[in-house]
Length: 81
Image (cartoon, rainbow, N blue to C red; front, side, top):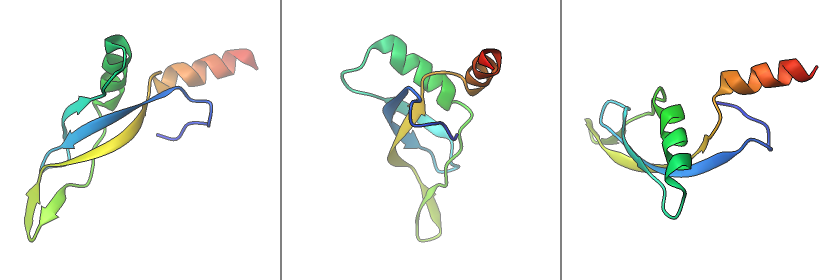
């Protein structure tokens, strides 16, 4: 997702499965409620699986995930104009 520089995000360490799905996501030293909101926003994301030769393998990546739902942000911005 594309967000402006002012978007409130949280960095998560994401375990990507061999089919590109999110298997797990963690963040150290953050409030559990913020981590849970970021995990919810991460649910529909897909990644390119890592490969070892012709075999897809799980891998870790660190991503910045927005804490707000994109649809909520757009509606709020529309209401301001």
